Image 1: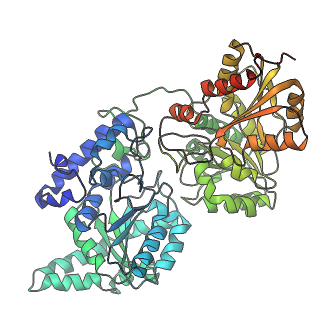
Image 2: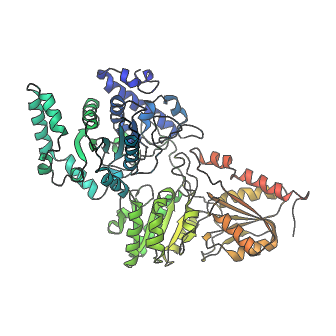
Image 3: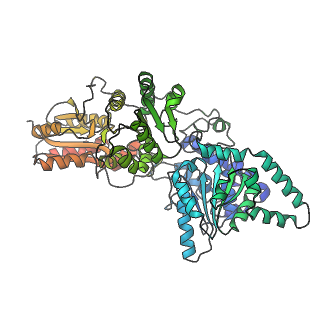
Length: 627
């Protein structure tokens, strides 16, 4: 086994060139086997095997640096830097991350998790290198999907001024998570399919290489900013920006990649290598369904089908159904996503109402301001974006939506702990950053039926409103409690005394379990579904303070700026004599791992919360105040 000979960084350089193909095949077999068990990003990693091998063969790590955009294609990089054993616990609690992590290896140059950042980070490292008089090579690897993000162009614009070497590799597989959209995709596709140019170039190079000193001449031609490309491929965007362009290159030809990386290292300035790869290469199910195998759940290797087939409906599924019904009833309803029609559940809406569906690419900032424009034009836009990705559009939410009080609905998927993707993907800050913005209103549903009711309420609300809901199976409990959604009002579920649980969204299910434990211990307990995080239901809280000894707030959000903090401010302001226990996620980044295990470790699982409540209620030696 060739892969077993790679135990540490740079061991790949001991592999004979004639064995590169066999090594690539072993890497793919390893990744398919391991990810079928743990889940993870499969398609992107299978497509980047040869590219990663070529980088490790061409560079001297860790002195040279590779910055992976997003980083979901870095599994081969981890294998080649001696982390093979880490795949047993990939994305598990305290196990190896599915993204680059500087704390894991000195070969991970920069922590990533969101797209379009690698050129900026790489340029910063280049400037640091030059100021320190170092000679290392800096390489940023960015996907064509990430080029739909404006930050990448801000960085390219800045990089064009460089007079020292900086290599940018464009890994072009015509996919981000879903199929790419927009002008960038069309532009790159024109380059890919410019066969007249490619064929002519190849014939010229082959002819030159057959004459004495031909290799040297070809190298000089490739290094030169020749105008031939400008004539055959109109509007060479990168060259026009001042970035030397090399390519396109077959991203599955290790030797060709090594040659072009060697050429790029000699360029005195920013240079882009355009590499064509196939997402999911080497595994037929991933080649046929690249979006499904972007972030794969555990699956059967033979069929490619998920191991847990027939799962109950998720919150995303419920949102998808509601959107289709809204689209049928109201022609002014439009949907916007940022390269995530599948992940956000908008694929069905797109198929039914293509003229009212807008995928803007990986461009959350643009998505929000675009939605503001739609709202100003008299439509009812619903922006579906993951919680952790929406953070990027904070300024646009504040300036372009909320200052004008425009009726934009934010459907915030993956709110709260999301698990295996870790710090960069946990949706634990949205209540805090959205609550800070005037004119924003925030709701969180307790179950799948309430999500449906809240989306419908939000569409007719007439002002900025966010509905946040978690990843995974939609809770089907408490169906008998379905009071109409009323602005700023919570929902009483169980009205008792002693302890009042005010639970936000996904924590209502946990609160049910807490209530059961507490009542079994002899402590009466009310349960209130908070529903609104902004505005909070001051009347319900004031009433609860007069009837209970302890108020407990429960939320899947960090403490600072969250629901509990708002409740504490209310109780202090009104000088209400009641104890408060604010159950929150600590003000810290939460690592990857199973969600239930993370909750237990953080202390927001039912047992931990119940223990805290019983300790507080038993401090005076009695069980509880029955009044």
